[in-house]
Image 1 (cartoon, one colour):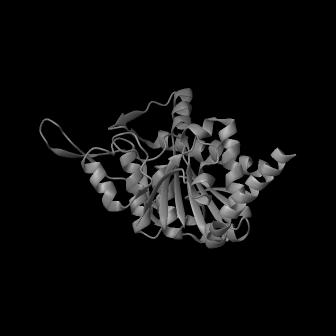
Image 2: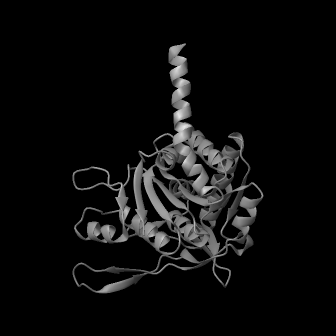
Image 3: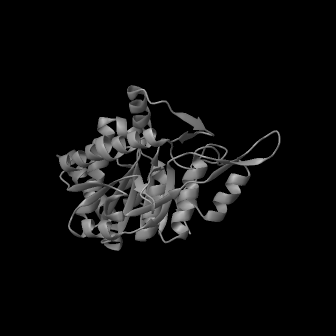
Length: 297
């Protein structure tokens, strides 16, 4: 009996600890980029869906932006569509763009909607095309030849980046009790379809909404120092210094660039955290301990 009483008290203590956060962020938006390991793990998917539904239940407006790179690659291989990479970036011709839209806006998007429904929430699956929510432009990247030191422009085809985000459809959906699930597909002013990196899409949406939080769920604990210890709080200037001295490298650089852009453009704070940890978002936000790296302006 005593053990059961202790368990109840512990649950009550957690709720009391979370209460100030519930009160402070009621009615605010949380934008969550979801992808990677968790998408292929049924238990992690269930935990994620429960977390999103809980956020909605306590008065916060979650908006989910999802990726799907591995699933796109698998479908391209199945359909016999050849694809190539330049400096780690997928070259997206018209055929590849069509497959990407099919996988992202179709299978993955609707699977997430069903997970949310199973957890007791009401979700609506959309892409940047719906309601002209996101206007894209062609992504421009350059690379420098290590031998000649000459810089050249990379043509990645139909890979884009958000130029403008109209939040009307998101605000309307959230106000009606729905949870928007966004596939990172959008068109430009001429109607061309572009595949957009999910981190970049999530950052642009968070900035446009003036979100309280942008969560980037990854496969690592967060930003680590050179000793492998978690860095829990960073400012944009800290990130620039850590990039310069080599502490931050590889795939973490574009993620942090997205975070910096979001917080400088109107998002209150961004968090990089491990999506493999059960209920990582709740641990980060609703407890004093935290669970990832917080980036704020």
